[in-house]
View 1: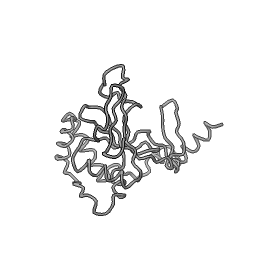
View 2: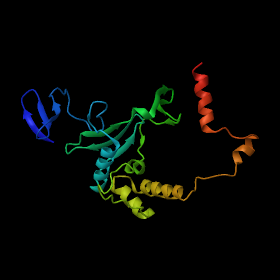
View 3: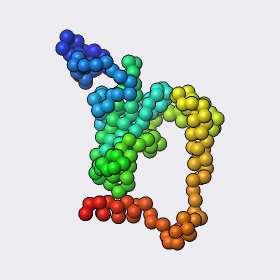
View 4: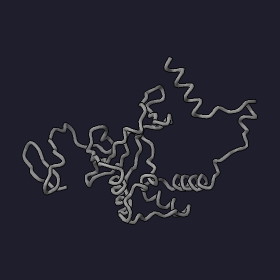
Length: 208
């Protein structure tokens, strides 16, 4: 964006033809890192393809980002050159059944009845499926464990934590979390209750 008009009372920014953002000097305190909260600049994109295009280009440029799934929207958070949070967002209200706030905090219930975190990691691979053909080459690599740990350290993680996370991800990708021996059923003497059924029963009970 470029500055289109600047006065004592406001600054207009946008393209050569249109104003996209108007900034007013009403802040009572300077910006604090990590405290953008609900009041931050969010650029809303029109469709999944455009959202995928922006995400792909940020990945290609290796710009530090935080892709986040709010269920009711998909978001990419990043910092501008002054360290202020900027959000690129795609509204997806059709995926949200309802929000809930309980003793354990906020959660989102999607249309399938799945309970989700209100700020879960975004499924980047799924988003990339909406990328228009031949739009951009995405430099994705399935890194070896050591290289993955090095990359995580480059983002500021302590060496021990980076190595642990890399090891866990590799183990999970190899199926180490899969377990089909039904040991829990044997221990409790009955079949286990599927998570979906347990949540449905819990929600039905709490609504009475």
